[in-house]
Length: 230
Image (tube, rainbow, N blue to C red; front, side, top):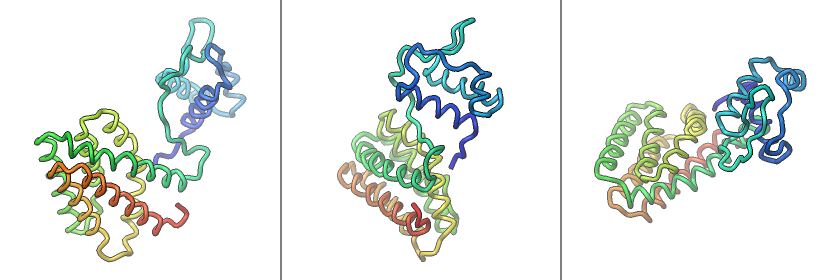
């Protein structure tokens, strides 16, 4: 999982103040010198944090006046913050979100996937399955399979959300696949992927949804087995 930098933490802290309206639209932010002193960080950290807030549309610079909260923060970017949470809890919460998002994504893919997208998904499955048969972790290939399902929804928001969650998914897969204590469970993952693929190929949205839900719910249970604090 991505470990937040000081700039991450500062930008998240200020973003939360803006979104909670502790800093209101058109309020001027503290100066660079004030932020350095208040949060005991370097000027570089402050500048990086400000750059992120500007890129997210939360603040604007006004020549010769300073940095101000934007008139509107509608559409502010979604974030998963680990700065103020137990990392294990974040992993669990992200996994629960994945179950909801990716189960419906599989159903949409079954309805909407083009023949080319189904062929790409089948190819990704075959690569992942071959690596599992060879005893590999196949983490990147697992991510690719799920990413292609997101793309096959032909809904850019689903596709972007699944890609956004990939760093957290990568962490979860790393935890479980480096603690292989249950004989044959990698084969179970392969079979679960096969069920999702088959349902999408058959354009059976209900079966695809059920297969994806079962796969991800099983994944959460596997994670809890190897990381009891999750």
